[in-house]
Amino acid sequence: MIRIVPSCLLAVALAAAPLAAQPPLQDLHGNTNTNPRASTGVMSPEVALPPLVRFTAKPSAGRWLAVLPLAPGSRVSLLPVRDGDRELAIVGAQPGSTLVCVGGQNAATLCQKVLFRHGFPAPVDGPVAGVRVTGRLLQGSAPAPGVQVRVLPHPLPGDQLVTVPFARDDKGLVTTVTTDEEGRFVVPLLAPGGYRLELRSPGSWAGQGAPFKVADPRKMGQAAAGSDAPTLDLGALNVQQKGS
Image (tube, rainbow, N blue to C red; front, side):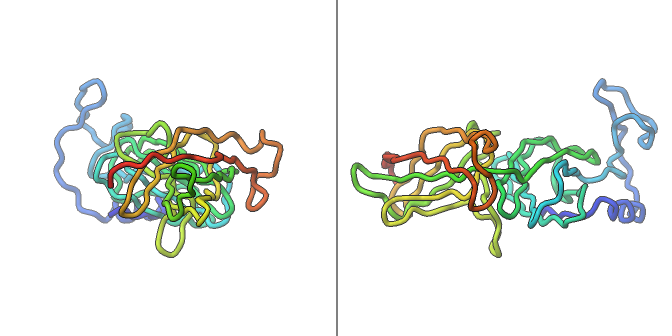
């Protein structure tokens, strides 16, 4: 399970932890490091800090961070962020490429692929100004009500199927909107980038929409926060029914 703690607290915990015997370390060129505490760019496992994130954007209301591992079978973790946090340690996260999404109130979630390394802060941005995305789902000429709509990055950042979280609530991440009786849906806010819709009618069928792009809201001639955000209307989308 991944936990999040301020990085300053980790130094105290690590100083009190017993040191276990470790095999010799090697750098990227295969050279053995006989002094693991020396400044060689390779950290000794017994003193290695967990992966870190460093926020590059100013604090925003209700900011949160989600870690979406790209390895199949890995769990998604939702982590709260305090207003004063600038750098955080992701306890339990493994080194390697992962998707980090940063969201907040009345803002679009920004998902970015980062490389986690022990003790090295990965810069992350977000949340950002976004665009509201709307559309209407049809089956033939009839509306398609009750369809669950999720948004996937396009292209996918890895082999794992990941869904862009729009917000968080008391139950966790909000990743789904549902079409109304007329088949209409509204995705609250999306950051600039490429996406694809994933569609599912519970117990009936599933499908995907065509890829689409969200432009920078600052170039759309409208304000880009909350109810004044610009809108991208995808129009009427005829869904292709697949097997359940």
